[in-house]
Length: 436
Ligand SMILES: Cc1cc2nc3c(=O)[nH]c(=O)nc-3n(C[C@H](O)[C@H](O)[C@H](O)COP(=O)(O)OP(=O)(O)OC[C@H]3O[C@@H](n4cnc5c(N)ncnc54)[C@H](O)[C@@H]3O)c2cc1C
Image (tube, rainbow, N blue to C red):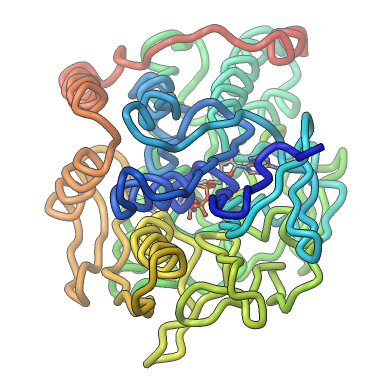
């Protein structure tokens, strides 16, 4: 009996795992490139029924925008295309048998695209994994928001000053783009919450701390922008601990590798880096220290010409400079048309394309009206970088309706900063935490 997805002699099956920036756009580009009557089936698999636009996740956590606006149903995006969508979890990839084990069925393929993204890297700190909050998914954003509200509620009841201090100390670990955006958004959210609903809590009791291992924040940007970001954070009242490595999180607080005293905190948001998805890391292929699969300049696995790896799952290098592409949406999104063109060339003949995208730079928001950006080597900071950030991500959002709604949310947040945060219901898991 044929397994699901098994190709007949003439039809070929392209199986794409992951509907994030790399997988979703590869599926859409491939559908466009192939003639309508080409004997090719395309299947896209994801554990979620929606595509998540991560660059605005921190704003969903703070309630500046509704989380639903960054979650677009995948079936809607595929409407009118030949791509078949399966909502399922990928459990295992069997490269030699050209099979993929899903939670509900087995699929065969002729060409495989692995675009399963990454997971948070805790660097082996088991005491922190499972306890710290992450910021990778829409439920992480919801959990973070409810966690903060639960801490504010508990602080209004707490008489012990030490315990109050611990409840009201919010720590972000990781001073890269995600960490800096998260901590500045968090600081504004905490101040808005205090002004709007919790004015019985003195402002000076609310601590926001950023911990970074290196000697500057945003190490991927130039020192001038790092310094500008640091200054802005300090002006916002964020305590930035540089050259500080976290070793443990105990009842005493966050423990550091050097001799400084523990930081008593009830909240640790861990955004200190990513590593490959475990399904990817388990593959018997050449990988880097983060578990990402090494690919050639056509985005294929060397020695396995029918397997492509993209996005955060791939260790790809610029063919001229040899620099490894960073795990960003920008790279994943740019790899998609190249992978699609190469798959189309595999199927219908043609010359494959090399992926030689020159990284444009980073755009980082630093709360209201401020940001830093280094597009094409230029150094922007303050309002211009912030405006560019807003404009760029508005354009990148999927669908006009979402763009319009996000723009309206932003306008409301600018006009009424202290009361604009959108409320949504806590999950039962968060609600259980209400009596801390
Ligand atoms: C908070 C945050 C902010 C960010 N901001 C920016 C930014 O401003 N600019 C930028 O360029 N990048 C940003 N990034 C990085 C960016 O999100 C990633 O680099 C990008 O999403 C990688 O694309 P991808 O397609 O490889 O993976 P993803 O977009 O993560 O997609 C992977 C997909 O695989 C699915 N999946 C995973 N495991 C399984 C499984 N076992 N079974 C089935 N499906 C599975 C997931 O549900 C997901 O849909 C940010 C990331 C985060 C977390």
